Image (cartoon, rainbow, N blue to C red; front, side, top):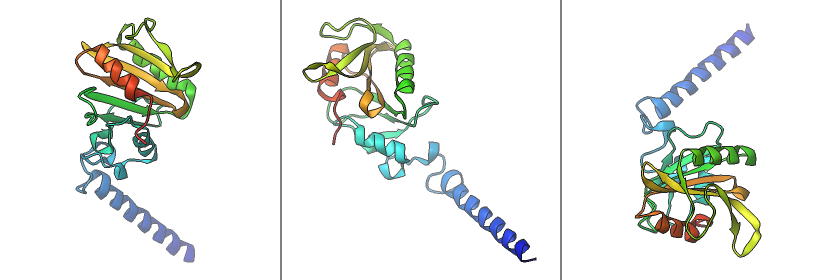
Length: 192
């Protein structure tokens, strides 16, 4: 008979936990109606651990307040944020930063991203189509992959930071040349 009372107590506790989760994430609570419970202002405290890690990897000019949980992220990604403003520069106007837990998946999703672009050669004499970028003046130390082109007739650059398992895509700006100059200055560095 004692075990029936213990089981009953556990059932009541489970129902209470479920009710609290419903109110906070899906009912009438402060996070209701927002994908994944993310507040509209993009506060990093509402992001999960993977999303908070991305916030720490954002290029200068992007902040948690300008980002929100991505809609329709890659299914194998750990986390993904869409950022709509860059306070450090007039471009790019839109960005997505996606975190992975392995290099193969990162590279596969980079190639899928490049396949969805109308590819052109990156400015500065870089080869046509997806290529690699190097760290500083060390031409032998590959930092990741890069692809330049357009999406919906807007300049677009996608790149990876392999050491951080991060895929980034930015678009907008006057033209691909100015977007590429932004990437050269900020794309390979974090704001930390």
